[in-house]
Image 1 (tube, rainbow, N blue to C red):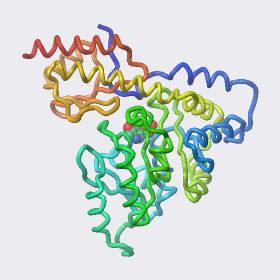
Image 2 (cartoon, helix red, strand yellow):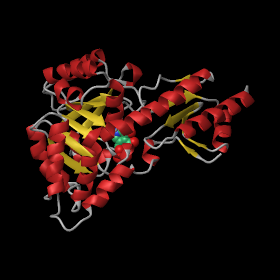
Image 3 (cartoon, rainbow, N blue to C red):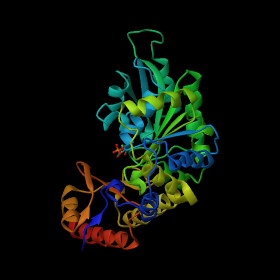
Image 4 (cartoon, helix red, strand yellow):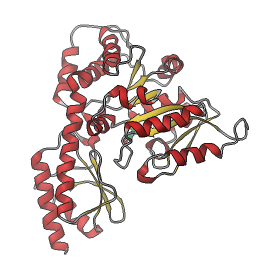
Amino acid sequence: MAEIELRSDNAAAVAPEILEAVAAANAGSALAYGDDAVTARLEEVVRDVFEQPAARVFPVTSGTAANALALTSICPPWGAVLCHESAHILNSEGGATSMLGGGAVMRGVSGHSHRVHPDGLETALGAVRWGDPHHSQPAVLSLTQPTDMGTIYTVDEVSALADIAHGRGLRVHIDGARIANAMARLGCSPAEITWQAGVDVVSLGATKNGALSAEAIVVFDEDAADQLVYRTKRSGHVTSKMRFQSAQLIAYLTDDLWLRLAGHSNRQMERLATGLLDAGVEFLNPPDVNMLFARVPDGAATRLEAAGLLFYRIGPGVIRLVTSWQTTDDDIDQTLECFASVLGHSA
Ligand SMILES: Cc1ncc(COP(=O)(O)O)c(C=O)c1O
């Protein structure tokens, strides 16, 4: 069997529609640093797609940059970002937010299914020594949508958490590295899951879902946007050939391409999860989007690898499988056959 890619949606190639958009933008010259017609058009597209005429957009080159810049635009150096204890910003970004934020800290809040829950948030906020300079002052609530473990927040859940956060003077950020997967699953509009639910700043992922190192910060808060003009430049994210990032993001957001790619990825995961459940495989959580965490004995994992399945082992007896826009029906069929043969063998 040829290798089957289930390690990460980051490992997928660039979607053809996105590459075509880059090629189409590759004509003639254009002013550098985002002063070009394609980038101006991107802002119009974002305003249209998010149904928010005041929205601003800042293209950046990685999800980590999007998060760190988005967060530090709404968190002072003495501030704290509250997030779930499993959040990528806390565990997997090397302290980028603290570095760019002049010492801002991140505080993990516990919560079932890898999501922040209203009670947990209230408890965390209730324990703060407000106004005490010895204690970092919570300034932001950051929600990872979907979470690093593939669970999602409903629109009502985002809204309830944002209400609590705003009530204490915090602003709300979404790490939307895979927000298209969450939206495809929820069937909600971009406006409903962001500013209408009380979200101030969004890290809009695109790379994991078919783009080529193009992400964006979408901002609904004027002060944050004013800061990002300078913060993006000072951190090296105002790229000279921004038109090629902007062209990708326009293609991504046009005619629902982002939702079609994410919907495909989610559906392939649904097929995979259904087949694995039938084969008796146990999951850590039911997969809401395109990520699945399954309990597989280490010996069986070794045989799956030997058969050509590419996946991550994330702990003893637990593997992570991720589908992408590129995962084919055949990939899923072969993966299921491979599991059937390995689990049959280990039984
Ligand atoms: C939830 C989440 N947020 C942010 C990122 C960061 O993206 P990047 O690797 O492009 O910096 C990732 C990457 O895996 C992620 O999974």
